[in-house]
Image (cartoon, rainbow, N blue to C red):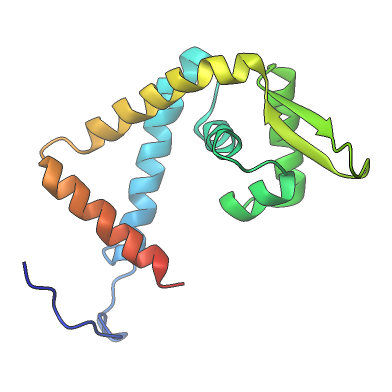
Length: 152
């Protein structure tokens, strides 16, 4: 397939509709995915927002500040979220042996055990949202969204 010549101006500010533009659509898709994920994860007593934290911890982020950057939460909200996950026995705070002022985060044994089930639930939600898409279309959508993310 031929890729069109990249352009800097896709939308005309005079006719741009924030609800039907890409940003509005992506925001609405995110809301729908989070609502469906909240329902799906309720059986595990986990919210979609907590799931995102667990994904980041499972994939290498190990600090509250790193989580804040990755998910755009303010430090106070992140602390409360980590507190809840710690009370649920899924996350633990670990003082750095090199610098006692540094507190790292890690999944507990229970957190690591439940994580694959949470991922399976997220995959089910995503698959339902992609009903009517071919695998190639879903992969194309992923590539296009990755290109948008790379434009920062």
